[in-house]
Image 1 (cartoon, rainbow, N blue to C red):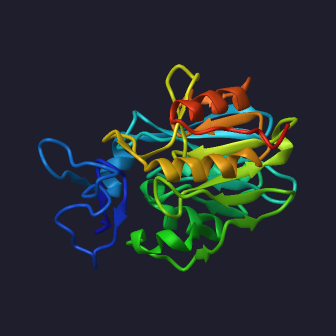
Image 2 (image 1 turned 135 degrees about the vertical axis):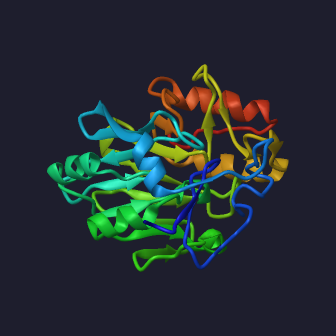
Length: 270
């Protein structure tokens, strides 16, 4: 039996040498503890009641999710590439069927993250596929189970392969980042986790300090992030929850969303 503890609210896995009574990720203004207090589970219990499902969204994109939904309920993205596949963000369960599925499609060359809420069981995924885990150094102190595959990166961008790049925008967390993949759509595709969040209507984009607690960022931070986004070309945006995807008019929606914050958006990619 594993002595790993899993926070049932955010899905973070904690090793036995860190016996927290309360999950540090949830005991932070950007997340929350449930009304009844901290709840823990184990890998064995989670695997016994849940499984990982894959859904094809595009010739080169698969959405991975835990069913039934668990903890935050985010989706991860398995992105296929001729020079190596990448997993964007994690879900806190890795079972044998999804291991086999990923291996049948060429395995993983790397795992990369938007921010700490999705670190979950990243070491399990990295161990299974023998690949590095890319995390921005600004969020290093949120890594409570740093395995041998974790590689910290610095600065505003990290170049990957086939033109893919990790871009640090900050905001939600100092290390909050996006993945830009130019080959997936005519003007490029961005996977944003919740560095940005698409509204359920798919007509608005939010950038906040805390989404569940509705805590805004300072205006100057929104302005800074908006200025960065002006010069990143993309026409497709995937956020962290199922169906939060924009494939049409994304620049127009981004512009109108920034203007609601009182921030001008001059589209440098046009």
